[in-house]
Length: 348
Ligand SMILES: *Cc1c(COP(=O)(O)O)cnc(C)c1O
View 1 (cartoon, helix red, strand yellow):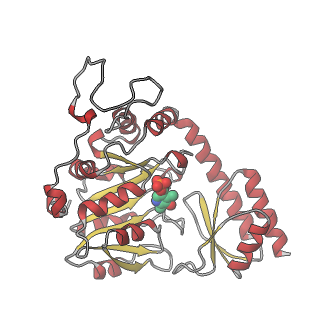
View 2 (cartoon, rainbow, N blue to C red; view 1 turned 90 degrees about the vertical axis):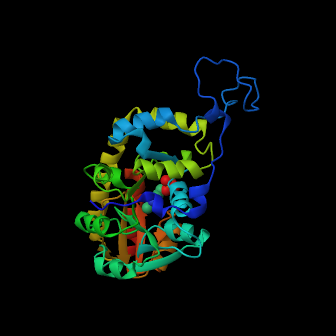
View 3 (cartoon, protein in one colour; view 1 turned 120 degrees about the vertical axis):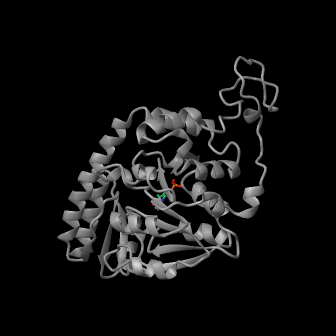
C-alpha cells in the first residue's frame, strides 16, 4: 500500500477555507420543537424545512449495502458533482493536470476544462484496456488525478483489475474509478479495496441499475480525509429532501434492482447474439454494462434510419478507437425487439 499524505494534495485555498456553516449544522441538539433559525416558512407543507445537509439516514443504509463506514461516503447531485468537486478540491487551476485514458465518459474532460486543469489524454489499447506504459509516460509532477471508468463508457468492458492495482500502487495522486455500471457486473467492484488503498476514489450512481436517473444521486467512496474535504466545499444542501426520500425508499428494496439487472443482463446477451447475425453489423463488442457498442459500415446512415423509425441510439463513430461505432442501450424486451427488427430490415 502506498502511503499518501492526502492533505498535501489539497488545493491551497481549500486548505485555508472556512466552510459555510448552515443553521442545521450549528444546532444539532435534541429536543427542540420550534425552529426559528433558518428563515423557513413555518407553515408545514411537506417541504418547508431544509433537508439534512449530511444525508445521515441515506448514508446509514448505503453504508450497510456497500459495507463501508458512513464517513467514507459522499453524496452528490449526480456523479457529476463529486467529479467537479474533486477538481476543485485537489487541482490548482492553470497548474495541475489529470490523466484520462480515452475513449471514456466525457464529463471528466469537461470538468477539467471548467476548472482550467490541463488534460493529458492517453489512448486505451485497441482491446480497450489500460496502456500502463502510456499512462506512466503521461504522469508528471503536476498530475493530481487519473480518471478510470470500469466498466467503461462507451466501450462496455471492465478494465483489468491488476492494471488498476498497479496504478494505485505507483501513482502518488488520486486514482478515481467511475463504477457507474458496476451493478451489472458480478461482485462488489473496488469499494472493498478502499481498505488498502489510500489514493482510491470510487464513484457510483443511482442513475443506471437503480432506475433513478431523474432524482440525481451520485455516490463517492474514499478515505475519510478525502470525503471530509469534499464535504467542506460542497453546497450545504446539495441533496434535496425529495431525492433523499426517494433514494431511501428504493434502497430499502434492493431486490427490485436485482430483478431489473437480471432482466437487462439477459436481454444484453440476447440482443448481442441477434446483432452479431446481422450482415450490417461488423462487430458487437463484449459488454459488462447495460449497453452494447457495435461497429457498422455506415454509422451515420444507420443512425439516421433508426431515428426515422423512432429509435435513438448514440453515435460514437467519431470517438478515437470507436470509429464506425454506435452505442445501443439495452431497453425493455419490446424495445429491443423493435431495434432488432429495424436493423434486420435495414440489412435486407
Ligand atoms: C451514466 C454515467 C454516470 C452517471 O452520472 P450521474 O451524474 O450520476 O447520472 C457516471 N459515469 C459514467 C461513466 C456514466 O456513463
